[in-house]
Length: 396
View (cartoon, one colour):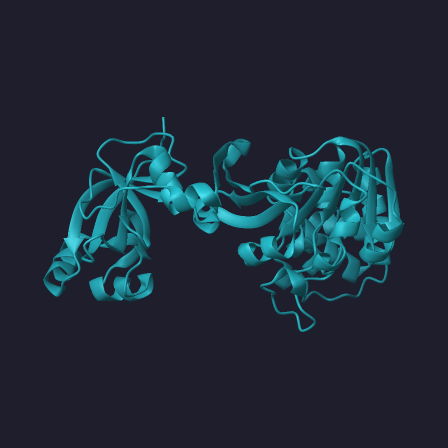
């Protein structure tokens, strides 16, 4: 895999600009440059994404796409909290991040991957990380699932790109197409855990799969990363949605609801913006808990299609961003001109507004950044305003 000279080259350039070192003279025949470049790129990509792997200098890396598609350490740790038991099977092993963290909750774990080189890399890395009771199979996911023994949990992370490399929207277009064989897997396991991209249509995925019991929409520091579907055999109960936002130090913002509770929820709409403005985290917005979150925290919604909320008193534990309202501007030329005089720069967002943030920035004529936040939005009476506010940093 690597000799001393290659290892020295990697160590010396681990934090170097990859674009620059790719241009160096490759005259030293003792250095495996292609391997070294892949290792350097890999370590640089996972430094913050997967710190557990980064801390081990002997970790080997697959091609860039496999690293890009792998889970982060924080989301993999979260998955590990969802299941435990005797036997775990990951039938789309890949780089092995999810497998590594989930397997720690089981007595025995089986890694399955159809790419032989990925299997070799995974075997090396699991050994370096001290993973015990692991079996590795170089096999196709569908074929392996047909002959596998019973287990406590099966995990699948289907590839979400078509043959041309484009991103897919529907579950049936992923590879493998889990809709074609998931029922056979449910005959052999107590729990089937499926990871999907947040770009996929959740409603159509649920329709394509019976037995879904829970949908987890997972964000990391307010960036939606993945959707997890949990399926159990012989279960047709109401589906629970869990909107999870993983903050620093693995602190969770969590909001639970059902589609039935969302449809029946009653919330108050308003055209009067009070002292505080609230923006739900990205998981809640992706899940569609628009009325449920207003109902749960007794706050007023600005408009049916404006997913911003307001209240007179600060709600400390609101799952999202909290802002102190400073001023409400009308969306008129005269007021835009006045804003330009008073505000030199701001963070601009629009919600249910006729123009995009970039266009609004140009209309006002201000720069990006600073401590001021501007939200262009539509109120219940259909009036359009710009809410000037500052972020509430602490929730305590």
